[in-house]
Image (cartoon, rainbow, N blue to C red):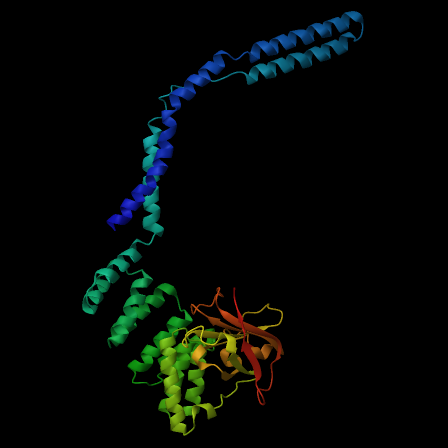
Length: 408
């Protein structure tokens, strides 16, 4: 933290210099302005111009070019113009070049106090302390102890509880994990992902039982996101325990489709393989069960692009409406090693209840192999797209889509 405050001080030095620098030129500016005012002939020039115009006006009156009324009117305008010019030339006395010097340190102090106060209010000092805790903790018990100390010092920092929760969970401290998660929900609100985590934790704390509280959390989460992957995984475990292996496979496939964590997805794939063994069928014989109208497709990689990326590279399969006005209607995720693969996109893969495949008759399919695993396209990603794909009965031959291009 000392390095941070030293860096802040170095950043403030240029700002303070900009405040002090004008004082060094104050004497020069004062003398230049004084000399300018002393040598200013503007008033004399205005008076001379006035006199010439007045003489011209009087000559015109003597020649009879204008009458008395016109002369009086023009003379009034001329006098008014001279008064306005003279008024503009009135200057306030120059202040001493030393005046106002006291305000500079006051303003400088206000800048420093304001900057420090703003950082303390909106900065990330607490998160830097958290980072330092991770860097200087030699063991898990020490890390946990220091994090607990930080939780008491800054109970409103969500990153503290988000860090403590998986540590407690993975070390078998269910009540402590639940307390951390509830604190996080109190700060962040009833976010579907957090509610799903709480439902999952309560489910396993209740010996894999669907209690009323767990069911309420599941219902609340699914109301926000019908395909929330953690809930899908929980429901898959429940179905597997009830020996309903087909339903378990269906739930786990839906979970994998929306799951960003490749490690968790691989664990669910292993669960799917075990469920298929219990059913006595080979993996390639197990057809996915469709939920409403959808798209049956087969995704493969062009031979020219094979071997360019690792097998665990993520592949995003996205269905969008033809006009591109709605959020993605369906999203599935597989890995490059899964290709070629056959799957069914339907309402199970919807990102929200407001946008699903059953709302449209045709879609545009976009398939992208992401080098970084992120959702934003990058140079080097492989992709393809196909427009006008009919949404409907998923029986019959799948729509073939081949990844054959690279983003440059």
